[in-house]
Length: 369
Image (tube, rainbow, N blue to C red; front, side, top):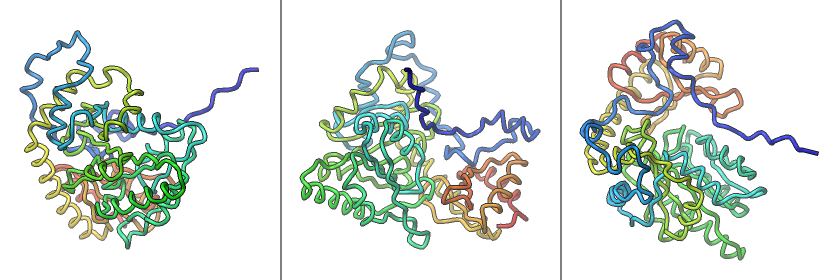
């Protein structure tokens, strides 16, 4: 007797720009994506695209990605054998889950956070232990004691700093303390410490990283991406960074040539020109401050953010939904949350250009918070 295939959890992608333009009867160019946490402008890497590629595009990229790895090793101050290039950060997350989890395993996540951690864990047959974050009054910080206790039963621990969707970050010393507690508990219990995956997609916006903690906690894997500060979301380049022994089993699950030749060349060029990402971060930080001030002036309630987006709380989920629909009818696309989400009464807004942000503020006038 055959068994029906198990339905796997999947990530729900946002509606396309063309779909939204058709739905709301607007020209495509009127749609502004405040929902996807991307940068408003790409970096100027036209010289890379205008040149020839080695190897040529009719061949597969080199299996060692030597040029990309060398550029990342210098940028992140790590050894080349501590780097695994991936097709965006999401492939790194999937590979970590594949290497760490089996049917019946346990993964721990601090919620609310990026939904993909739970999805890739459940796809491996793991159980998810969700540890609620502290309240807004405590900057949505980690409940260190509760999180460490949950990690005692886990094979994989997911962390995100700065966190999506709150925009807040945990001081590195608190992360170091958490890892020390997890390590101590494992030693006392006579078991292996769990792999800890730290998603640092927005690390450049706070100018700090926990990479140095990999020497104190060897099972730490840090995930980086060129999608945010480097403004290369469409290129799909990320990295898993860890001690070689920790990286080895993850490497075994990567498909050959998952990062294309063009993506690798653009990624290496961007990493070698850190001034481009630095200028992008500075522009976004300036616009984030202006957008936060202007939203507050309208009576909206934005939380402090250290990223390229702002979380805004409304009086109720219904008020958030009405605000979202009003914005959508004007071609401005906010990130909404489902009715069962802890942030059902919130919208997340990407920080975009001054002109686009001004358009958002004009549209927000008169929308009750």
